[in-house]
Length: 300
Image (cartoon, rainbow, N blue to C red; front, side, top):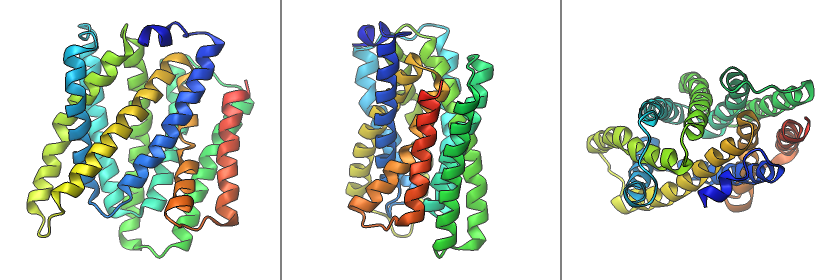
């Protein structure tokens, strides 16, 4: 399968496939976000998910994908550290800030920083219309966070700290997107980087989650953590794999922007399945987010 996908590099078919993969990743990212929005502690959710996709990936790296080339190991370990710091900031943001405010701030920061970063790393360039699309998308996402902050009854004492960590998490999104795209392009078989990273990621965060679990006076049921971890692990593998293949086939910046339409899909999931109200203002902002992504993808 990887040979077929890589044969599409630099072709129009490859570009179209990258578009589809980015949208799939956005939908799955919204599903993953809905899982984290539940009542289970975000530190435990993250640990359960990491444990699950690490265990799922071990048989694949041992028996399916090629062994990493020597030059790939530093990139894998670097990615492991970047992801770990990103997850720490994310857990702190979700713990201290309301999800409906924190999540849009994270997703709004990501594309702005990523598009700048990939210009230096990969030499990607964008025209004025595409930059306008990036600004529209990010501004609409930030506005969505502002609307949620104004309309919801939130703890203002902890919200500021939550927003601070949300901004740091946004920088983390840009950092791992750029670094991982470089790693995927540095190996013959992209699956090697993707699944070895999943294995390595399961080393650092789960022990922190376990120590937190040990200190809890009221511990959640193991079955709840296991089910959340297994579902989240499958979603994460599919979502991350899709976006990484997309960065191999198309511009990293364009793919990163398309992924942030996950905010739209998250709102749709909330409306359709969680009975959350959208309202005219939020609907308009979601149209602006989608419009910005369209300008970036098709405005060249």
